[in-house]
Length: 89
Image 1: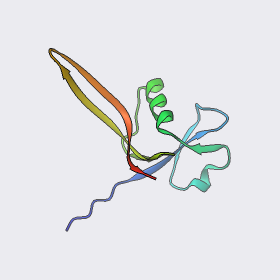
Image 2: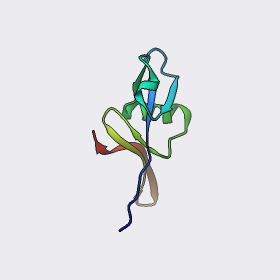
Image 3: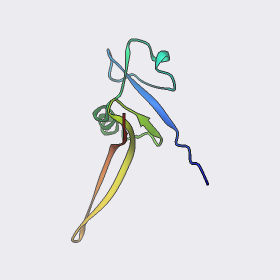
C-alpha cells in the first residue's frame, strides 16, 4: 500500500494591509495582525498578480487547491481558473 502525503501550507493576509501576505506552517508565528486567507482572498491575489500557489492551502473555508478547467463551446474554448475547496474544515 502506498501512502501519498500532500503538503498543505497556511497563507495569511495582513488585517491592516491586504498587500502583505505570508506563508507559514504555524499560526502562532503569524501574530495578531494576520488572518488566515479565504478563497475570495486567493482569487483576488491571482487576479491582481497573475500568480498562484502550486501547493494546497489551508483557508478559512477548508483546504483549497488551484483548479484549471478547459471548456469547449463549438469552435471556441474557455478556461475556468480558480481556487476550489477540496477538503472542508
